[in-house]
Length: 328
Length: 296
Image (tube, rainbow over all chains, first blue to last red; front, side):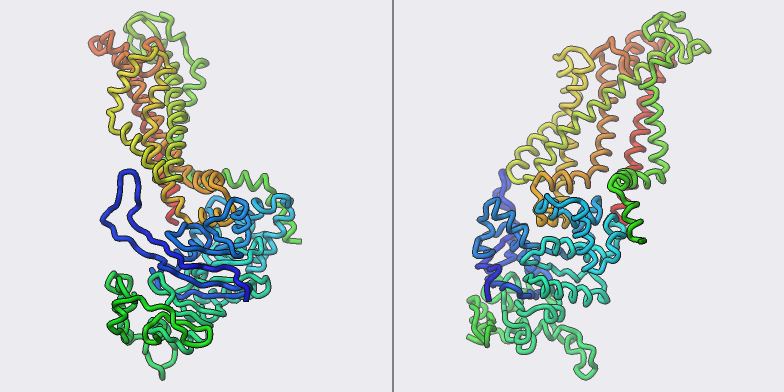
């Protein structure tokens, strides 16, 4: 499969900002993304699963160049995004979009829905008349289930519900028929009753429009529903990647196993296995190790070598890799 | 059919009008805002229509010196027999003018500095903000006194001096607003939509902090009126200009208190207090209303 976007050894460290008067502080640096490498092919949906604080959002923001990395590259059509000049950047913005997590934050409260959604048109399709823009906006809003679009177009975001706002955000992202969309937890702020519908719509848009998706989520079941491939993210690193079916049915990395076990299943026979997971480290500093394998302090199968060196990616099946010494 | 009528109702012009007026509607529910606005409007009207309603020329000797309030002289006369009411009304215009222009000029400087520092960050921010810190720690009033001693005593130089000294606080406020607003999701979305820095700054960031800027402009008006009256009271600036400050200056120089001519001292003093209160209520009304909307 042809590679649409390629991430090469991407790193982003947040920490004490250097400035004129503050050389360095006592605050520790945080490695949000620590050497992630993967790619997304044309017409492919890849999901990234990770717990909160694992660096998923930072990864997404880096990939659309809302942030600059500490090191590493993101290549779009073979070109490094961070070295693009102005014209290349314009092309990139046209073809790569992102859907943000919080629908209450992602629309300017002072602009009407029409103004927000048509913004990309005003910048990239200046020649269109207002009438044509209105038609295009209406078409996209209706494809996201906002019918009749005329009733929504001239409202302000404050007059819409969270679900409606997220539909608007998705419609905006789809406006220019981008080749690649990063969806950063697009349904995590929505009612459970709406999630399936939104996921279905996005999947449909991707399949019909030929758009590649990177679906970022903490919820392994929606990732399983959405993605062709799955990447498991832990503390800024990819610990396992492979086809969705392989990863969910034959998880290799101990962290993936924990993730899958922690999904509540409404089945009394299987019992509350997820309640037995004594892994409530949360995001405290003790919940992950600072050297060697980051998962070592929470891992059931921990070995001496795990604490000493970071495990490389091992081949564990067909197009299936895990970063764990158990397979080394 | 139904859809057609809906889209006809929403012509761009009516939509624009709706957008401009609608944010103001909740303000009318705030009693503070209404009261503050009425007080301010009263003084503004007095200032604008002043020349039409004054009974005498403020410099004309229209009665006996030191005469107390009467039907002919509502606020009595001063030591030269000039009508205090006429002085007061004409003075309103000057005081308001100083307040308005100082607020306008100093907030222009403050907003530009704040936006640049907040949006560009890094070294620009450091350099600009250290300069602002420096201005903020200099005691303003003594500096005002010194500067006014060097400049020609006109209202223009008073406006100039006050403008140059009162912007740092505004720039701090604007910068802090930019720092929070630029992290908002819709700013990221705008960038993703291909908008440039200037567009993001003036379409996404700036309009969303308009209430806070307006509130601070109101405080600048109050500050400028008080500072101008203070300078005039000390005989700095143009003592021959007619405003609330020079009224107090002449009252003090000619010993109005010894003559128990309360009608000469109270009006400008009270006016400064009442107008200050009115502006404050206006600002509070806006702050409470917009904050409530942000929360809800």
